[in-house]
Image 1 (tube, rainbow, N blue to C red):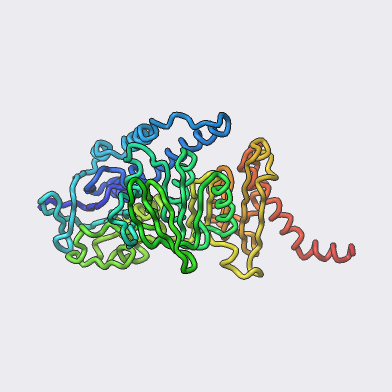
Image 2 (image 1 turned 180 degrees about the vertical axis):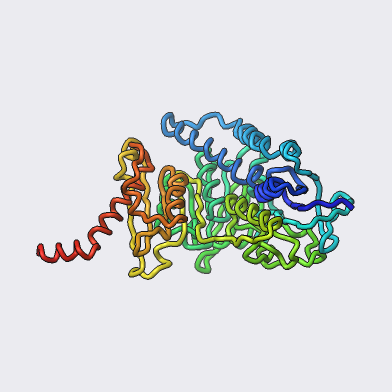
Length: 461
């Protein structure tokens, strides 16, 4: 029986990160992937969706300037080209060059320390499960009888539909909804919550909804899908709101209501690995109920982001091979929704604290010189600080929000007070200067709340 120090199941971002980490410490490493290396992000998620968003941006600008859409026949070809470029950095050849063994096949456990793959039984000192997630298809009447699409299939279709119903107003639904609408697809978003992007602050989600509506996206909130049926070339969705049903017609339907863990083929019971309703149960060190098996990425949660998956992959790998164990820390989570404008968030929100415990600072992008050079652009930055002006949360909607949140995330993670940024010289005119501008507000607030300043102000009266 062949044996490795570490066997990793899953060749997405989590598994690749784990493999490079264990091999970097000189461990004999095997990576197993049943599909193509790269996983969700490369083939169905981040890479193709962001490429589509960039194409849609160019189409939107062209339409605004000329009134017409550009030639869109090569959209899928462009996406495939970008995917292959990314794949070249994570292909089996790259793994081999680094000394990482690779098997293309479906693995399942045959015991607590054994796997079967392609008919061969293998073993290792430690295992890391990183099989990711797939789109969850809700139990809607008739859904299996219609040719629905998901993020796994939309980038494989030959041409875009003329109209599309998108079930789910989360990041995937909203990003694809805006992009496809800009490419000439008539889009209707269906969201069961009272707002789209319900994980973000309401006023920021509301702003995004207003932008989408102005661009022509139809939005139905507080709406639950009841039934789907196909008649001729059309798909009809019956939805319900306040106990009243209504119908929406489109050429196709995209399901983006959530994810389910890819665990069915692993036979985890034979390995003694416990699961829960969302995936694999792990402790703070990412160890499963089997002390020799770790799990990381989307199959463990709580955040289904590529950057969190890579963080967990590295942490699980280090814990599997080193004598000391690191705890996963989710106190400094951040994310970006790649709409236009972008939305980004880090940490907690103002609503998570009593008003007396925090200081809240806001800066409108319209007051920023760089934004003034782009007529029509808008946005808002909101930073929540504790009484010592340390950042506990931030929300942004505006140009470059995904990049701006990085600077805020550094200050938040390192415990640097927002007031310190007032002395950081940012190039002018840039969007990043908004950090210095909002820091000036915080600095002035700190000065005015100084006991000596308050005393002087009192005597002045």
